[in-house]
Length: 341
Image (tube, rainbow, N blue to C red; front, side, top):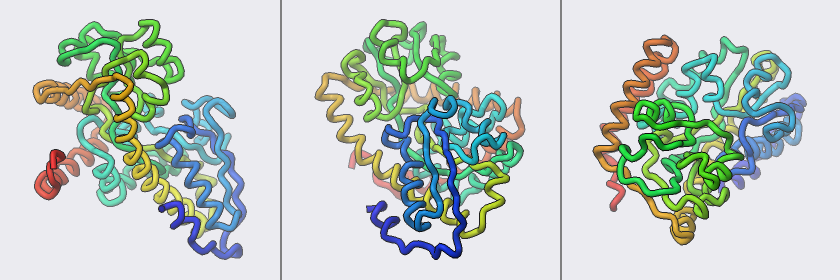
């Protein structure tokens, strides 16, 4: 087990590591598998530093609202925070791309792009203007494309539906005539139950199961074109980061890399069981056709292109991701067995 690997590592000499005691507000509930990367990273970091480096995490709302994590870290209100970069898209259009990009990067692709394809450098450069040093700390695979209270046969049936969805997915569906809504995750079950929304996109299968969606929404859409992968990040105030000794920085980076691998393996392991339970509860999949996916891809590229025209920074990150994705496909489509095998 990865946790065994980390906890079994010999602690670094206490003479090499300064004492760090940081409060770390989070932008998402860490009780959800896949969003708990910072919990694992903090545990292992404490163990391998002999207790010298402690990151104490706080759930959204305990210290500050989840959407305010990056801003609080930037101002130095808190030394670090754990969140989605997508929350920063209002002030940084390119920020969403570091969380997810429709159609282009699955979890393995994203990790390869980040660590070896220049993504990490682009991320650090983007946030240097915000007085933040960001570190990738968690990647999960695709979510479900949405939970539906009534069956649909194609994306044409989505027109005029009230759909809870956020980010690029909302922009794309708006072009199709869908009424998109950004109600909170906590309000989603009630909104589906009362008919406030007809459909909702929220998390991987296990998340939907935990929320009880199969009880009120008997259909779920696949595959997830809007978020083939989702990344979370540890955001550290740049001043605090620069104060740390190099060994301490490396321990933090190593712990987040370990947590990224662990959360991906854990969540992928759990989704098959979750889908089985969802089906046994009576929910059925809605499979998007090739024609539907082609249409969604066309609109997605238009939305991304429009964002690129409005932001040179967005265009720079997008170009890097798309170029890597197209190059990687030449290998993945030839080297990997089709899923049916």
